[in-house]
Amino acid sequence: MSTVTAHQGPHWAEGQRALRTNFRRSQRWTQFTSFALVFPLFVYILMVFAVPLAKLTGKSVDNTAMVRALPTTLTLLQRSPAGVLPDDTVFKALAQDLEAAANAQIVGELSERLNQEIPGYRALIGKTVRHLPLPGQQESWRAALTNIDPRWSNIDYWATLRQNDHALTASYLLAAVDRHLDSAGDIVPVKADQRIFVSIFVRTGCIALVVTILCLVFAYPLAYLLSTIPARYSNLLMICVLLPFWTSLLVRTTSWIVLLQRGGIVNSALQWLGLIDAPIQMIFNRTGVYVAMVHILLPFMILPLYSVMRSISPAYVRAAISLGCSPISSFWRVYLPQTYGAVGAGALLVFILSIGYYITPALVGGPDDQMVSYFVAFYTNVTTNWGMATALGSLLLAATLILYAVYARLSGSNRGRNN
Image 1 (spheres, helix red, strand yellow):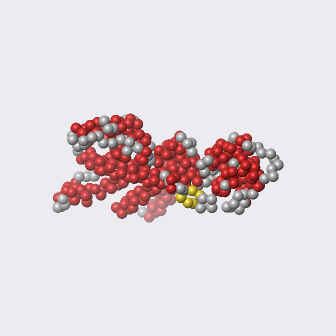
Image 2 (image 1 turned 120 degrees about the vertical axis):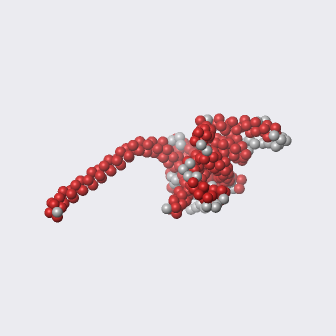
Image 3 (image 1 turned 45 degrees about the vertical axis):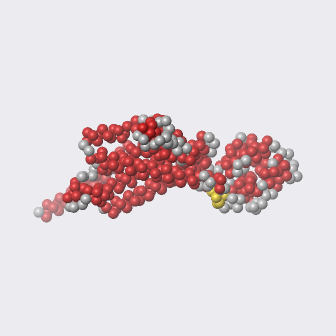
């Protein structure tokens, strides 16, 4: 017996090696096939989402207009002492750089960028360019420029140029959180009457939080009902839940304007029931925003809850009741903990969608109900200030990523505890 085993041993080992080789080759082919199937989708997402998003986000720190238009001036300014007016050489360089920028037709981009730092800088640049070129031999370039406009003797205008001598700038991001650089280069709050963006971000978060809570309150019992009733009724109700997806968001939002206005169906019904004596204002305020957003976002909370509740066996609750636990206590201690994951997923989805809303608050809300997206659209379409628009959008994106990271960390910890 040992002779046969020894005789067959090398063949057996060779077969094992061939089997492992074939298995690895099969694995590599499977991995290659999977990658080939996913690769077109990856390229599509990269080209139409990731690359444009990265380019737009880069505009929030882009400052190339300054560097291209005033190369010599910015270089000389860094060699000059801060806090005082520069010497005559810098004034001469400024005049020459502005003349070259006007010839290259980039002075408009420069003046627009500087006007974002100090209102009125555009007019100063335009007035100066109209008086160029100055005669080549000047006894004092400083006197020549200050004669064109006395603001060139103001140290704040030169401090702004000094602070923007790099191709990247934090000015937009600082402005998005109501901060700016003073003449000494320190980060300080803007004037009290200009502090708007922090309150807008707080308002956006508060509206999104209230909408998320309301969606959870309404969606949880409805999802529970859908998961417990017979399938034929459940399917019919699910069609009603999904029906809003077949209607345009704009149509659904404008419908609430008709329903909630002072002479609308809701006010008329409340008066007919005797609940109110006179029509109440439910549109163009925070109430209208909440009602419309909850109606639109409710399915996004119902679907995750329903998918999890459907997989929970009712035997768990029945077993708890049979062991002496009350129905309320069994639901609270046995059923509810099994839906925590769905609650977190639905709340995260609704909250992230809420903080990016634009059309609904713009149509049914008032001036004090507009969210961050409204101002992103304003800077994009009205003032064409791409830097400020992308700065606000970048902060909104950062908040979304942080929320997702926190949710992933918490859900991962819960899975680890359960395991």
